[in-house]
Amino acid sequence: MTGDIRDGTTAGMAVDLGGEAPVASPCINICRMEAASGLCEGCLRTLDEIAAWSQLSDAAKRDVWVALEVRRAARAASPAEPTASPETSAASSSKAP
Image 1: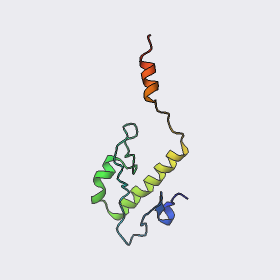
Image 2: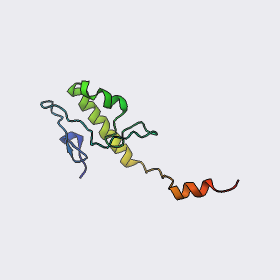
Image 3: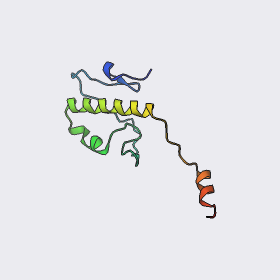
Image 4: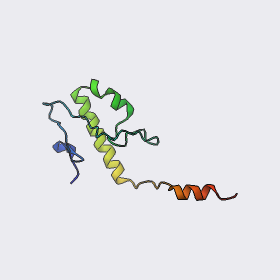
């Protein structure tokens, strides 16, 4: 079962959405930015969201969590784009025009 933002879990992680405890960071220590999307490969936050996290109110952090759930759902619904393998790239670049 994947998580559900309404019950405080997402991607198997507990998230406090009740407003009592501090809101956990979505960082999962896979910190690489995707050039095409501008999102972190691990947590799906933007650089602005990552940089601002420690200064955000708990309400704003919850808003980021909601946005992350939407981003995850959108990724799950869209087919993955194929990537060129090194063999394919090398073969196509060695062909004469």
